[in-house]
Structure formats: structure tokens, C-alpha cells
Image (cartoon, rainbow, N blue to C red; front, top):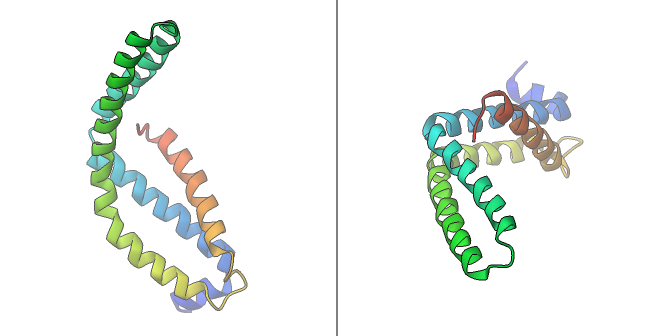
Amino acid sequence: MSFMTLIQAYPRTSIILIGIIVSLISTFATKFLTNQARMKELRDKQKEHQANLKVHKGNTEKMMEIQKEMMSGSMEMMKHSFKPMLVTLIPFILLFSFIKSAFTTTLISSSWIWYYLIAAIVSSMIYRKLFKIY
């Protein structure tokens, strides 16, 4: 039995498994292509800044200063997240074109994306907790 026949015979199971596998690959790319210690440090600073915003609620000058620091931290976090995205972008685009063609003749041809998204989001949340990715 070929791979394509197997996918078309069990479309729901196949798309859920593909979503879980793609999510795992994406999670590993994020873990190994980003500086996790720096990401944790930035995330902790963001939480600290949010607490400081609540403390200095009436002082607009101090709030603007804290928000400026938060923005610079957010920009640095975004820079770190671009590397894994760039590495996985082309393979995932190719994979999606394959998936779309594979599921056009199945029972879930109009809804396969929802199965994929739910499986990928749920598994990504689990993987990020398991592998402590920030």
C-alpha cells in the first residue's frame, strides 16, 4: 500500500498525524535554533515589566519608560523567532502543497485545514511544555 493510498484511506487520522509531526519538527527547530536561556531571560523581564506597569499605574512618565523597555524586549524576542521560521518556511510550504493535493479527493477535502490546525496547535502547546521552550 503506497503512502498516498494510505493517506486517502484514512484522511482524518493522516492529517492529525501530519499536524503532530510538523508541530514536533517546528518545535525542535525553535529549540535548537534559538538561544533558550536568552529567551527565558527576555520573557522573565517582560513579566517583571508588566508587574511594574501595574505598580506605576498613575505615573504616565514611568509607564512610558517601562513600555519602551518592553517594546525593545519584544523586538529582540521577535528577532530570535525569525531564524527557525526562515529555516522551516520553504519545507512547510512544499508540504502544504502536497497535503492540499493529497486531500482533494477525500471526505475531508473542504475541512482538512481545521483538522490540521487543531492537531498542530494542541500538540505544539504540549511539546513546548515538555521541552521547556520559551
